[in-house]
Length: 105
Image (cartoon, rainbow, N blue to C red; front, side, top):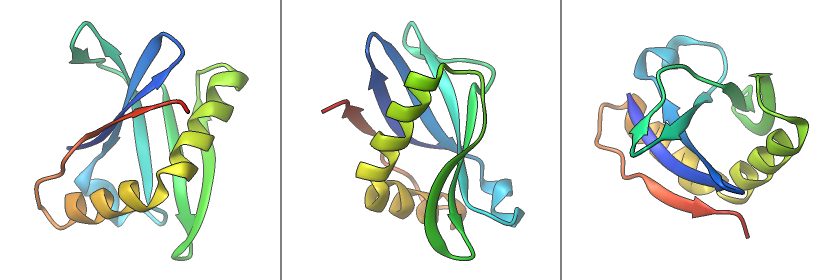
């Protein structure tokens, strides 16, 4: 798994993760895991599509987060699209990813 970014939404933190075997799915996406006391949570709380037919298209596929958290998550991903997309490519190519801490502006 490639950890791409650590996101802070209000007082909660989430980690964006790419799973290399997911490169065989139709659309690029990230899984969102909660960050719990310095470790990543066990279960994904959201799956976010990043593109469609090779074009940027950020949208929620599934989520157990609140609508406010979903909106913030989409905004942060959109604002950091180039970095996240670059890290996704590295992850799928088997290269080391470099997580970035991202805070809500």
